Amino acid sequence: MRNLSDQEIIDSVRKGNDSDYSIIVDRYKNKAFSMLKRMLKNEFDAEEVLQDCFLKAFKSLSSFKGESKFSTWFYRIVYNTALTKLSSKKRMTETQMSSVEDHFNLESEYGSDEIEKEDVNQLIHDTISKLPERYSAIITMFYLNEMTIEEISEAMQLSVSNVKVMLHRSRNSMRDLILKSKLVEELR
Image (cartoon, rainbow, N blue to C red; front, side, top):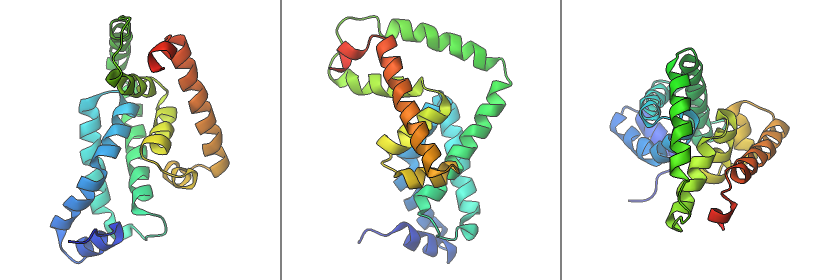
């Protein structure tokens, strides 16, 4: 079986082959989940929002015009849905409690002097998750999802120059977190 493009799969779903949508889900679930987990800082919320995103995208397939790549369109849905979830979360006192828990987990997580090489990847992911939501999202989209500046611009509905500025600030924030947490030695 040849590798189908996103547009071919979407066309098939639009013709009534709803089961083909599972190909899209399989194709984007891991990267979208990774982005959501970093933005929401909660695996359960990330799973819940991811399901909502796939459902929203499925219901809105008829409005997808193909003017941008499907991935860009889908990541815009993911990003906006995550922001909506975050704004509702911030109104709850649970957010304050989870930030306190995160602080205590940080201290115990990085307390050891020897960190194995395979833990470096985890350290990087943990550091990304400590960034503000927008910075975490842009770092994830650019480095982990390998999206272009233009695709990120469309997904976040920002100008290309704003995305470049945010990417620069995100890198600086990540560097500052690494220096502040004294992780430089572990990442070498």
